[in-house]
Length: 444
Image (cartoon, rainbow, N blue to C red; front, side, top):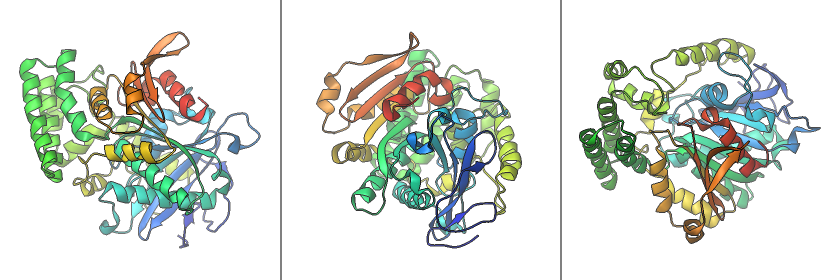
């Protein structure tokens, strides 16, 4: 790999400064991909899809970033092939791909996720702030390679643990722009089913499952008791213990619900067989699998791994000797002390001190980051337009005469309740997601 102040591997064996041209990769359309050294020993991978819209220049359409959750899940794998990229996992075309309307960049973040890698264990990130600063450095490298995008409207979208990473990334990028350290047209950040206030999510599990009839009062009480132990650790600032207790609370949920799906409470599971499979895992594996994997009962993870390590690696000519990973357990473990820390204060700072539009969109069938938890932390935020938000009505989201959800907006903040969707809103309800995309990007 060529080493530059801001270095990049073109993966065709070419290395150097200057703008990079679009090229054929895996699947349809023009693409670009490669690594940016965000720190010495830390190499972040991206995969850019240029829009397939009928335009004279790609720069006529905005640039959307997608950040996966975890921490440690791969955007180039999960987000791309399971949610919003041009192809489904089986190779068929996705009708609702975002690439039809805008340029989309998937970033394997934090370093250690997907194709991103580090030269040694000391180079992993351990805090949300470090993750955000790495992403700002990534953007500096990306713009050095793609200066045509500097003035193009930039929108950051994310999911799950991305709800912690994306706000701080947006805030640090905004401040970097204000200091004149980077030229970027940052417009918005939208948090999908976010882990922004982890304890609010955990505290929502018991009442949510009780109201749905998935657990009875006894089950509710057992889940709530475990959740309150998690809260006590959070209140005491015992962050690693809080993460471990969060994992224990997950186990209580699975036991009392007979194996409910954390991503979509209406999704069929194997019930107690699902629970027994989880029980056979180590506590660490159980912790991150239930947060970042789509369906532990099916072989989709294996299919995705075979696709990414086989045809994708070959098509992109990745010769660095790294193996793509669906979910990095090491990345997760390095962030265990930060995992349960909230990022609500970062969202408040964005709303009070920047011009960036901020949004939350949440699927009503999600459990892991249940909508009632998001509603609670939003209600407790302190921000300039809070009174207007509380007074403004909630309106319906209607697409082709179908009620797809609800919206509430004040100032630079919007909340979207999405019907018929679990944790992965872009895949579960693309019509509602298209409405949200239009709200922020004017395209969708």
